[in-house]
Length: 485
Length: 52
Ligand SMILES: Cc1cc2nc3c(=O)[nH]c(=O)nc-3n(C[C@H](O)[C@H](O)[C@H](O)COP(=O)(O)OP(=O)(O)OC[C@H]3O[C@@H](n4cnc5c(N)ncnc54)[C@H](O)[C@@H]3O)c2cc1C
Image (cartoon, rainbow over all chains, first blue to last red; front, side, top):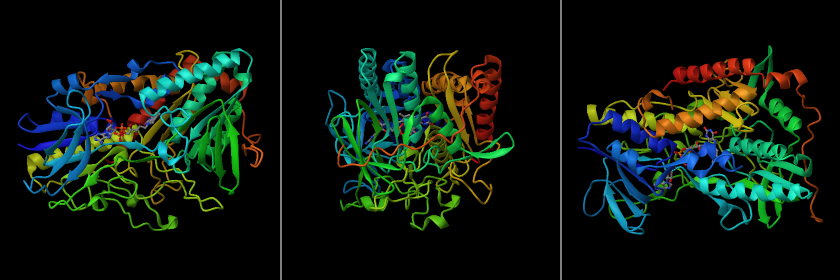
């Protein structure tokens, strides 16, 4: 019998767990360790954040699904990995701390033969003073609960507009190294739509505050589209949308601190600014979830497994070479942890070798560059790829070839809806292939056939379809595995 | 705000604005049904072509 332990039940971990339950017989044990009892379709938090969906629409309990799939579920958070075992046994282990009553706070050590780290992002609100719903005055849509709070605050702003007050709404990135610009982009147009539906758009100033040096960068260095026989850019396409909707962009910004009602930031030219707001949704920078690692004798070896950012080092090129030498082949293919053939890191948990956008610093030396996004589609693909590798290693032995899925070989779709009505909704829908540009294969870095941007109602339908399809799949309903990641 | 430079909002006056016709197309059910089918086909093609 083999013990497969998966840390995290998000897009990557849950996908890996479901596929393993399909690929492996009952004689093997699959264990998912995750601190939350519920699964959350995070992309739809955007709709929760404007009040178009409720929390119940985007979350569901994991335990019944895992019981049905014969997966052991432990509601706990992992705190340490012991890849060489401990004084008691040479079997590798993970230290976990339970997070649900009655066991809340109880520590336990569980053994594994194969380990998947799919712990996603550590939401580092603390990186910027005054940022975030817990200790600051800005809201977030990163979790369903954050989004519920954001919707409440937005309602307040709309009420004040209805009473004739002018309001300033700021949406964007709360730090110069944030990622997930697509989410902030989507949220800003949903906010714009809410204000229009409420008939108060003329009383609201909507500002998009971002660390991108150009609109349409999205942390992937922007895209080139083939539009009517001409090559055009995601920058022009995005600028057009911002102009049409009257959303004011502030680019190349690093938020330094937030005071109640005022956001202070530095821009790439080195100047410092302050912007007063009545409502601010600013995303935090992401880091790796804090996990320590220990040798068999208890010596800490965290740096061996993890990058300083807290993300796990995998089969990527971390040599830190200059931007001009970056290539698609720097990106991981198997997600196997360096030095271990039984540990993998997938989704947001793996350490990217470098940014995708050109790295920039302000005149004062402040890094203001989007970190590379690891969105839902690639996270799911990585989860499935590692599940296939583990299943092969269990069935065919430890030498079985690892399955591969590089972000330089896979595409992504980013659908930013703006309005949730089937007839009047709209969306900015983008596809890119590959995510990491490969200039050895494509002159523009990406396939012009598959890299496109569209605006219109169809994108909104796609977003709705993805919402229902992925929740169906995550619930492991009949035929779930036929739905691609 | 006094000691700080005014917020540097980007100038978008050079960005193309959609025409009335383009805006109508973006809501036209027939056009959008076709675009919906194309978009899904493209995602599927990417999934199938991706080397994984
Ligand atoms: C607001 C928003 C909108 C987005 N919209 C889109 C979109 O439209 N399209 C798209 O493709 N992507 C989108 N994304 C990105 C997408 O959500 C992520 O790419 C995806 O969730 C990453 O999957 P993951 O499994 O790596 O992390 P997650 O899905 O975050 O899962 C991480 C899991 O690990 C668990 N965990 C945390 N700490 C521990 C621990 N110590 N031990 C064990 N488990 C732990 C968490 O509880 C969670 O279950 C959006 C993201 C945000 C924030």
